Image (cartoon, rainbow, N blue to C red):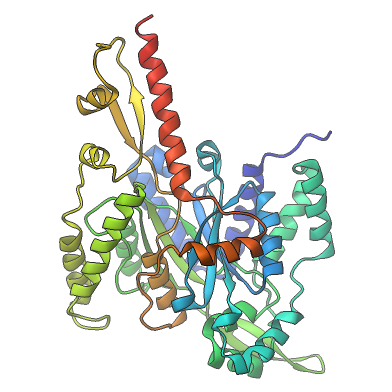
Amino acid sequence: MPTLVATHLIREKIVEAILASFQQSMPIYSDMMAVAANINNAAGPEEAARLGRIMHAAIRCASPHELRTINDILALMGCGPVNYYDLREKVSVQSTAFRPTCPQDIQRNGFRLFCSMLSIDCIPESERPFVESIIARRDLFSETLRDLIAVGQKQGGFDSDQSAAFVAQCVRLFIRPKTAMVSLDEYERLRAINKVAAQVLITNALAFNHLTPSVASVPEAHQQMLQRGIQTIAVWQGPVGKNFILRQTSCLAPPVKLKFPSGSDTFIEADYQETFVEFEERLTALTARGRQWFEELFAFGKQQLKLREGDLGYAEHYYDVMKAALKPFPSDPLECWKQGLAYFTYQFRAESVDHGWTFDELVSDGIIKLVPQTYEDFFGPAATNIFNSNIGLKDVSNVGLAQVDSQAEFESMLGRSVVNMYDYYDAIEADSRSQVRMQIAATAE
């Protein structure tokens, strides 16, 4: 049996290669990484170590066959699908996020990939034959990649040479080619039918449209990009004044030149705008109860806005209104723990303890320390608002987790069940509680 390469090293190599490609073709990515380095280094060694190690990207596929193959590829990178997001009402896709599902593996390399599949149901019925004819042209996965998938599944991973070949094939799959798959006329027709379909089907690739570093402060990243003269979205997305779930901000990268085939081996070169720059700030994970209340307050805040994007003073107004809307949600970790609103792990450092005390009393007294769990998943309202800004859709807001019936259909296409994020955080907290209980018991021996 060959010695297998650790999956976190495979993720690391893929991300390094794609980031280097982005920095070469789009200098704005060098600005982005410089900003991330400034913020994380200033925040201390723990945050500095996250740079390049905790990143996410996004792809969009066109069919169940593509989705299932992506699942096979990401499994060989040590990533499984977590959560199902039904965004069809606003952006014509169903999505999941592939990521490591072991905290230690996230610490080694926390790359995760948000994967959306175009929903043909969102295409007008009269235009479906045309869109399906474009989908039928796609042939994303080379014979070499398919063979490597089969080998990796049989062996449970890759040896050194196989790993290098797999990384090379994945990088090729995830970088946008310089030539479109459709003609310029076909592309314009696709845009008129559905802008998301046009983005998905423009090339024969699953190109990352962004590669996002984790930073210690998204508001600071937003400000530093503005100071560099780079136009960001109007306001950064996520909670204002509360450190829960996720904050994000983004701006468009400059357009790239793309060659559109025009027959007889000739091409028409035109600007193509899709790739963008984004930052994320991962905060404390909320329980289902906490999440429901938090999103209700978030939605309430959006309803209270009196100004619209483009109005003078919109950003200041937005932040003030959203901060006020979220004020009722407690900030104190102990209060969140008592109300079952957020997820934690536990640290016990006492040499001895009164064994008449309950676990809850030890937490309340500070003998057991609460450590907030980091949220490792996505936040529908933030993600879809960024999607809105970058693709030019209207009124995209507050799209969250989907209903169970649509999830079952998606899982059938995926070929497996998605991991429920609440089960993930619950299990970590339960394991931590058990570990601390054993430590407490040991003090009595």
